[in-house]
Each structure stands twice: as C-alpha cells, then as structure tokens.
Image 1 (cartoon, rainbow, N blue to C red):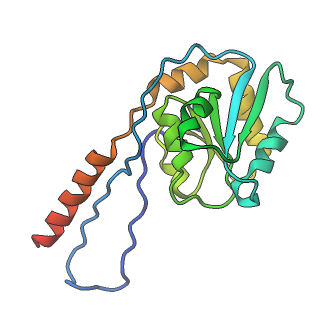
Image 2 (image 1 turned 135 degrees about the vertical axis):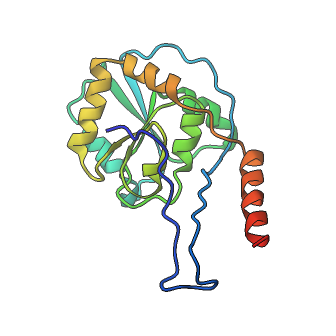
Length: 193
C-alpha cells in the first residue's frame, strides 16, 4: 500500500501542563537531505534490479528480502546487496538499481538510504513503522512479511512501467540549506514567545 503523503513524527509532549501551561502548538518540519542530481533513467524492464543497502544485522531485514526473492527467476528480478561502499560510489550504486528495498524489522529513526534513493528517482519499497512511514511515495509492507514483499515485487515484474510511474512522481527533497532555514524560523518563533 503506498503512503499517500508525508506523515510527520509525532512530537513528544510532556505529561501534564508542562512549562507555560497553555495550549501547545505542534510544529513539524519535513527532514531534508542531500539533493543529488537526478540522472535520466531508462525505462524499467526485466530483470527488475532490486537493491538493498545496509548491514546483515537481523533488524535490517535483509533475510526478509532474500526470502521474498526465493523462487523468483533471475530473468524476472535480481537482488543486489550493498553493505559498504565509498561516498563517491553512491551515483553508481543507485544507478545500478530500479527499486530500493528497505525491509527493516526494527523501527528506523530516519531512513537515509531511502531518502537518497528517492532523491535520485529510485522508488522504494519499505516496511511500515518508524520513520519509514514518512517516506512520501514509498510502497509500504508489514515488517517481517516476506510474502507481502514478494507480492510487491511480483507486481513490478508483471508491470515494470509501475517503476517508471513511481519514479516520475517522486518529489525532489529539500536541500540542507532550505531545511536549516526552516529550523531557524521555528527557533525564532519559539524565542519570540
């Protein structure tokens, strides 16, 4: 199921009245990130190149991605695993995949790899929960559910043009400078109270 928009983190609220006692105003700032250039990508086709970036630690869910790929013909889809690479290799790594899989079992606090992929026009299939719920345009599956992840992968195999449509709909994330201006604006508002 695709997340239709950006659902921000719930802010922490002190119990009771807290300092100032009055009504609390919630301020949410979408987290920015790197703004890499978006290179022109060719139309997606079989085999679908699925990417995984991260460690083999169980909470990252690589084993779920591997299980989801069981029985899928390599002429239909392949899984590329990137555990470590140099910063200078990021353009090559992201260009080598059609879709990034983020099958985390544990709650992610940010999802940097997913945001970097999406900034480069690479759609993401992630697990629901934590900050991954906030990925605008990502397809979300339940954590640890290899069958649901496989069903999402199969839809892409059956119709690779889904990848192209999702890629075209990904918005370019704000850059660090824009994010810093928004943060500063919030601080100034708070200090003026």
